[in-house]
Length: 484
Image (tube, rainbow, N blue to C red):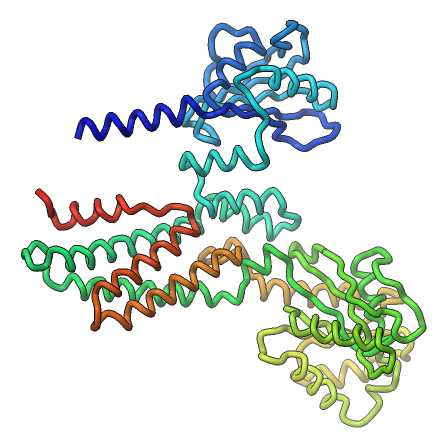
């Protein structure tokens, strides 16, 4: 046992001492009030002594004012703040140092050149600080991804979801499932290998079956989230559709508050899909303007219509824009017309549809009142009356759209954490499938059943980046006292 501990300690010592020390600018590029330059690795302490001429390390995690010098010439580069983080109590788990200097390009360049002149330091590769945090067990992969999402968050809802994931809530769910699977796998393997020696308690296989059945149900519920987390992370697909000259491009420009799409009285102006990334009510939206839907012999316009229909098929929210001034609502059975429109656009029922009756500025007040009365008790989903020309009704339309976005994405702070990455969904689906195959093999071949549990456990481990065979062995020996 002592020999094993010595080898383990030697590996840790080599891992720590031969590792490079890296440095990089951790704050944003460009002129700013304060720039943060960070080092990480075993030579961070030596670099700190050379740049400050301090004989002793400052107390960890305390801010100290320092003169930062060029280690070669002794020239004063800046006076800034220095924070020392002693490993493993740092972001990366290694010795780290942060230099908070003035954010002028010359100052930042001078300090980076000073660090680069030291032979024991090298510039960090993209993401290397976070990679070391993962390798040293400070973050699992879900927390790493949450950190990346937090950095790139552009809306309030995205920030909340990313912060929750970075805090480890999602990883804790997967690690709990992983521990349950690990124990179940250990028990079934113990039964296979040691049941004849009467070292394994009776009913252990039934207990494994209960764990697998419960986990299957939890996975099904987790996977059946209608992709809320992924939509919130990547943006909800909202598509404007309708006939030519209904005002789709005008509505896109009004919502975007800039001339994103060309607007013209000539029918068929929009030929391709025009996208705009927006923040609506704190939710990220990819708003797409599409070609007007009509029959045409023009091959370019026909392709535009084909692309429009394809984008509608991919939409999370469909906004059907209708020119209310073309006499449609004065014809017979207007409610039936809109009801058919809703049914055709909803398709499988998972998509949300909003109808925007545009150009109300061209109607009399009496006609507008009549239209409102007509649809007030129709039972149809929201029908918004608006004018892209005057701005009338735009505020109400955005409120309706925001409510639809909230229903799709939910509140990222409420309930269980949701799946945020396609990668997670892939591994979770594979895990669920493996558990289903376990049940199929259970009465026929325990070895195959154990292999399916091993596959399921490996799929969960791929999400967090933590898979260990030694932990399974530890459970076997601790639970069953085998091998005394």
